[in-house]
Structures are given as C-alpha cells and as structure tokens.
Length: 257
View 1 (tube, rainbow, N blue to C red):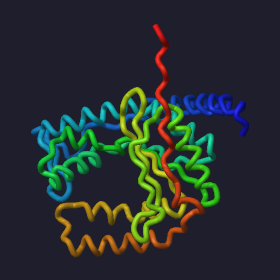
View 2 (cartoon, helix red, strand yellow; view 1 turned 45 degrees about the horizontal axis):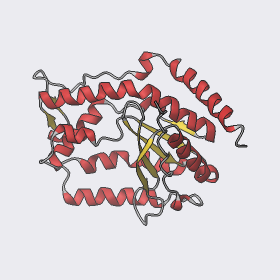
View 3 (cartoon, rainbow, N blue to C red; view 1 turned 30 degrees about the vertical axis):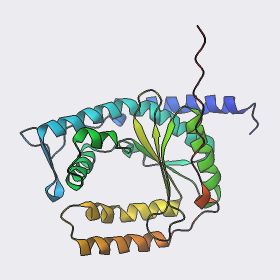
C-alpha cells in the first residue's frame, strides 16, 4: 500500500467498522450489571469463598458501567485495525468481561494482596474490555506489526506488551494493553494464531482453578504442568519472538493562540 493511499484506506475501514458496530444495537453491547451471586445485602459471593462487601460491589458495578460506555468507540478502532490487516476478530461478543468474572478477579486480588483496596485494584484492571485478533502463522508477524501500529497512530497509548512466544514453557501468545485516548479506559488486545488461541481456550478452565484461594499447592503445580503441555505443542510463527511495542507517538502540538 502506498503512502498516499493509506489515509483513504483508513477512512474506508473506519467508516465500515462504525456502521457494523452501530448495527449491533444496544442489546449487543450492554451487559447486565446485576449478577446471580449478588446477595440481598448488596454484596457479592462467588466460587471458592470469594466475597465483596456492598461498597466494594457497588464500586465494581460503577467501573463496569464506565467500561460499557467506552467500549463502543474502542471497538470501532480495534475492528478497523483488524480490517486493515486481514485479521479475524475472535469472540467479539465476549469483548466485555462479565460482571461475575470481574468481581471474581477483584475479590481474588483483594485476598492475595490484603493491603490493597478496591479502587487500586480496579485502576489496574486492563481486560474489562478485551479483544482477540488472529492471523494464520504466515501472516501473523506482519499483521501484529501493522495492527498495533494503527492503534498507536489513532491515539491509543500502549500500556502493556507481554510477548511470551519465546518462553521455554507456559503460555504462548502476545497480550497487549492500551489506554483509549478520550475515555481513558484500559483495554486488552491479544494477538494469536489459531493454534495458540486453541491452547488458550483449552487451558482456561485449568487457569481459573489454579487462581482459586482454595486450590492447594500440589494441585496448582499439577494444573501448571497440564497447561505447559498444551502450549508446548503450539508452533511459533517466524519473527514472533522479536515483536516489540510500537514506538510512542508524539502528542499533537496545540494551536497557538
């Protein structure tokens, strides 16, 4: 693609993506705030003895409401980046973390790190809004480079770049974090191949059990071994180990008065 044709391609992709997202309607982008485990006191009770007080539960609900408002604009940009690079957007209907899943994560963190409060935990949540872009092995490295570059060009700040393709064992993939320019909402974009995404889905239940406070040390080690075996079978695309975050883009210069 020539330099002169890039703005036209960007505008075309953005316009098409805006139309697609808007056509989903409110029902497709909203997620109920109340959960099955919200108790009558206003608190929350989850698996493995995890709990939130009424005040903590309300704070999580407020955070979720902000994430839902921010998601629509973020989705336009992510889907445009996918369209520009030929990526498949996997699991778009699950782009918003469910209330129970987020509450479980917050409550678990408060148990593991008792010195923290709910506000500090929520401030560090990077995947309440999340996406997965997937390419075949041969297109993966160039696709990631171009998609992440587009997100940076559109004003999203890179906050996390976890490239684990070079690990000897464990999870294989590229998990990235971003901050949206207007809402300030943190969101996650995972970059996968079909094989790495399959391994991630196959190990998800194992990972969730491993995180529970009630899971003993020996069982945690057993669960880790099972996850390592699944990820060991994932091929590494050429160049994936050296993928790096896009360079920070300069902030626009304010117009002089």
